[in-house]
Image 1 (cartoon, helix red, strand yellow):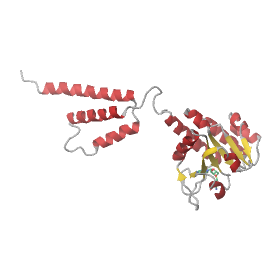
Image 2: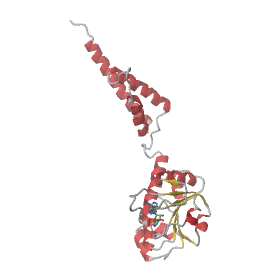
Image 3: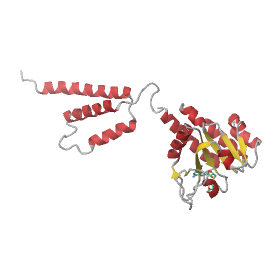
Length: 254
Ligand code: SAH
């Protein structure tokens, strides 16, 4: 399954939404990020011209929205469900960051349908509704003002889903490049070390944290095979230069 298909299998469930404008804006937020399955539980007013106006172009997502009488019915086919809340609850429930939740939802979507549930503008989700979801995600906010507009919260969660899907598809790398292999990376680190020693940048008797820090830097960059070849090429060029310099330094006086 492609990541795009997985993204299409994450549905957004809005419970007891009172402002139709928020439903339209949520549809727009979803469509920009590649999500299409919108489910509404007891919407205050729907369909509604205000919702269509705020969807501005995401009419297909809005038009395809299904209406349910209860949250259980809306979630019937979902294999992974995550709730959203602006508040930490007294009821202790597994709490995830939006990023971790996105990864979980996409993993669920590779097996079936996954759902992320949003509460009503004024009151949010009830504890009973929260308990129907496996975990809860909270978007980090300023402690004194934690409640985002409903559609803004939908946008952030859909964005995290998009990011997770693109990363999983290798979107961080150029399309035709493969991740560098572990073995090749280790060989590069060894070559890097000897070049740095040769340049007297690294004292082998006092290496401190330098090599570990450099490894951490390259790991973070998720180097591709092509990029690693460039890095090896640079080391070879440096080695060649320092050999020439050494030969010049060690030359016999005429
Ligand atoms: N007073 C309500 C606020 C509801 S805001 C409460 O405390 O829950 C409407 C909906 O937007 C929430 O139910 C939730 O689905 C979403 N939302 C708003 N702010 C959020 C945040 N910081 N983290 C996660 N979801 C949030």
